Image (cartoon, rainbow, N blue to C red; front, side):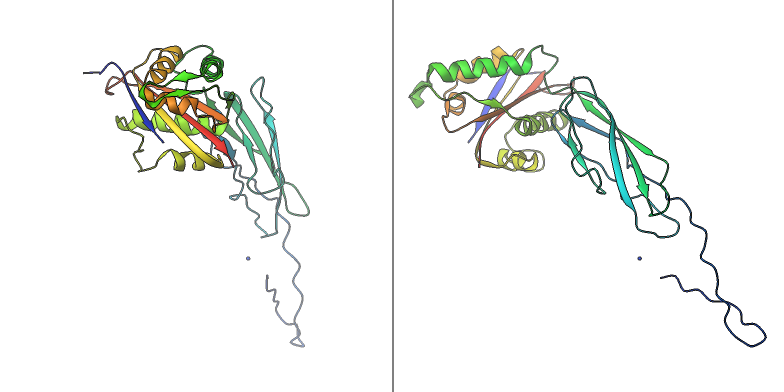
Length: 274
């Protein structure tokens, strides 16, 4: 039976030889014909919006064992994406999947004489963890920053003055989504992940270099306004949202399944960078 809603807070020489002639000398053997190298762009990937995608061309090969050089190209991006490849001439370039949709990267390797045929890899980027709610990110930022601008009474934790606005952070959003999806996958509700991680470890794993981090979680709420309102009405969660030290925010909602205790799982991560 599903519960309605709940909240929680947490502060590689080739040797050649030949047969001798009548004089027993050694006849030189010609070099083997050069064979074009084969590029391998790695397996297809599926990631969430905001994730750093690392491509892998290490399985590319050359029959002559010649050293290879790499040239990657991002040949297709979803509309609105500004993704660019970093390290496009390395074995493992990367880009940030900034928009949901399909990305295609192409790899050509060269052995110093000839180039390979191109190999392609597809990266599918899912919609952000928004539980299908429209204007998810903009509404969350607007609501949270409105509360911070006004100041708040956080129950018995006292009155908090106006605080600087927060900026949306992709890494914190990724960390938030990872935790919400973890709670769905393993049907639990806790700040401690199924692998024993806490918010600090998850933020670090997502690439957020923090000096301080905090987290609010909730489950079963139907909208951004409902969950933010519930957090503001809960002293500990309110304190997290009003913490003037924080500068960045990420929020995610992952829908539950019939086997989950709740209809959805929310995670808000807040942080201040180093």
